[in-house]
Image (tube, rainbow, N blue to C red):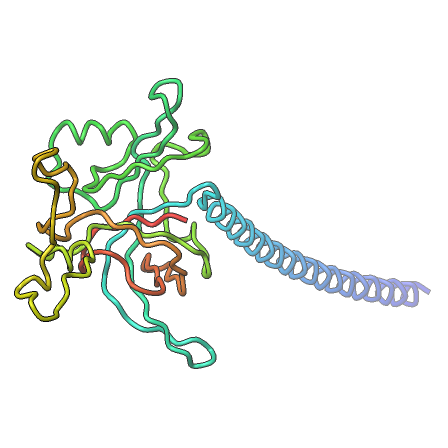
Length: 275
């Protein structure tokens, strides 16, 4: 009887030990599975969080870029690059002027209370040789000294911020703008070229008067030439504005405007573009 009881006890011990080992193995497998699942979840969550962060950053960047476009800005300072031609989808050719417009920075804002009128002063192209008064003027707006300045009247100057940057993104393709610049100097010219006179008759008895201005005033009264009389003189080199020009294309990366037709001035000349 003692031997039988010992054998039974040994069998029971073996069964319990095997069951415990199986439990340990299953528990270990469960723990490993749980740990792997948790790690996968952590990785997935981390990936999602990174993607979400990237998305939110992109949204923030988009919002900032949208906020940069000032809907009240309708003017820029630029430089004439040259002329080219542009083809549309139907193959029609259009002459176009390439203008490097901006980036421009608001260097001063004038209000009605202080200055008596509302205007915005824009600066264009950095000035490395700026003197101290000019440098101090731009320090107020937190902008580096700029070479060219131009002032534009606005309805409400509160819509602009000091030091704000304006680029070609304020315009859209198809906008109609007017471009002002200094025309090419043509030297001394007569009245026909300078003022569009018709000239004298080229018939018999009219010798060497074909391109002359003719009579310029009465002899006895007032015995002088009226001020402002159209006479021969220096032609060109004055401010000229061309209206009704269409924007055909915009290159936002290089700040280029392609305007239909010609604009005043020579290449590298300063221009102002207004909508």
